[in-house]
Length: 234
Image (cartoon, rainbow, N blue to C red; front, side, top):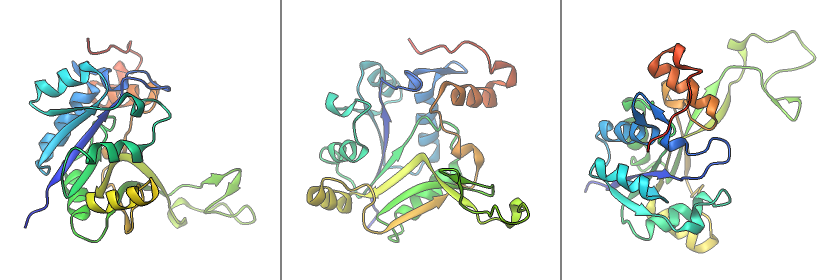
C-alpha cells in the first residue's frame, strides 16, 4: 500500500531578521512562489498545502490551486515552536508522512527533494532532517571542534567534517510524531532520527537575512542585481 506524503509549506508574515521574506520578489515572483514551484516540480508529493497566517499567502496558494491552512495566530509569533505548528497541522490533515518544505530555500534541486522523501518513507527513520557537511576548521565558544591548536595547521581534506542542519526539508512519520507529542508535548526528534545529506549546494541556500536573499537573487538574476532594492509582492 502506498504511503500518503503531504508537503507542508509554512509562510509567516512576520520575521525578525528579514521582514516578509516569503514575499520578497525574485525575477517577478515572490519567494513563496519559487518554493511552491520547486515542490510541485519534484512530483513526489501527494498533496501540497500552504500553512500561513495572512490572506496574501492564501491568494498565492489559490493561484497554484493549492489548499491553504489558516494557522492559529498564537502559532505565528517569533516565539512559536515548530513542534506546536506541526501538531496543529496534523490534527487537521491526515497523512502517513508530513514534510516541512521551506520556501525560503527556493533553489532546492529535484534530486535532493525526491531522495529526501524516498529516505523518509523507506521505513528506516521516523523523523528526518536535511544537513550539509563542511570540510572546514570549526570552533564552538572559541574552542576547536575538529582541529588542534597544538599541531601544524590541518589541510581541509584531512579534517573530519562538521555537519550543520539545513532548514530546507524536515519530515516525520505522522503517527509517531503525534504519539510523542501527545505524550510529552514535543515530537520534533521522534524515535528513529535520521539525516539526509544534501547533494547539491543550491539545495542548502536558505534565506534568513536580507543578505541571504540578495545572494540567492543574484544566483538567479545575475551578480549585478545584488545591491538592487528589495521589492515585495503586493
